[in-house]
Length: 386
Image (cartoon, rainbow, N blue to C red; front, side, top):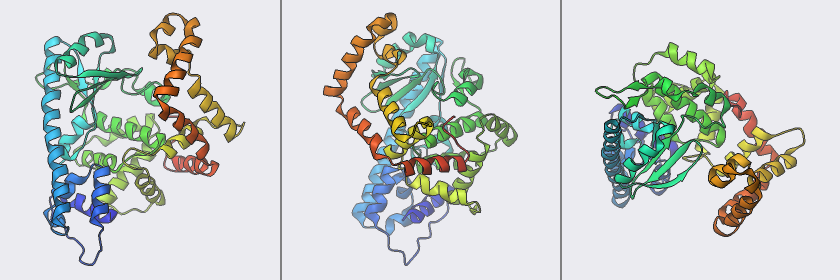
């Protein structure tokens, strides 16, 4: 089924006919479920010969998903560009990131599904940016140390204060001055974009971060494939990836994307390992991998049980800095930490019970799983010290 879907995607990307194998028995319900989960249903909908092979009611489902994605992308394009126009008028810097740039490299931008739109803004001018989004029908959902999330009835916008969270040491150090990688868009004075090369490096950084954290989906491979179809200064890209120790990972990942969606042949067993890991991760990684990743990153000489205990303790008793961000009173007076820890504890106990379930999952991940993930990450050129 996976090979069947990959061949459909290849035909849509290349604009060639899909040659469906005659004697292959495909579970089209499973194909639909998998395609929808990975946001790939649009590719099937744009492949007439694939639709001909399946029952009409299932073909209609693929077409519906594509129509919905197309409407969403059109709305997104209008709203984001309106926001950028307002930022320009107000003299406020903004730079859309990742998918908002990459989607235009696909045969149709709606094929690049985006759960949200990431936009870099000046952290010291947030109070001027917020009213613009409110006037466009967005409401503040929540804030973290490195981003602010706004939601409307249809869309999500993540305002980034920085390109990479401070928790990722090497990547954060590289992007400590995020505007260093910005260039003005044509006919704009305050709206920026990354060069194709810096966009590619940032995409690899983002993919590596998610790969380490718990896994990634097929869409990330598609991004790398379509980005590599444009002319790129590989000498510059390689020099930047070298600084981040991501050259080996990028080579394997880019090769896998070309094996699946182009005409490359896999000769390195690590590429096959990477393919299996991605297919087992789901569209955005899975919880078991995420927990195993944290254990790999924090594993010490005192053993796995002690490591799990430390991580659970850290979740229950967060740092003063963490609590101060969510409860500003703690930031003003650290002596209030015990009081607001109790407030947070009861909030989780009665209103956020999913958090308690997440803690119990730490004990469900075996040492073998941790060791296997650790070995795999090292084999593909990654570590938990990004």
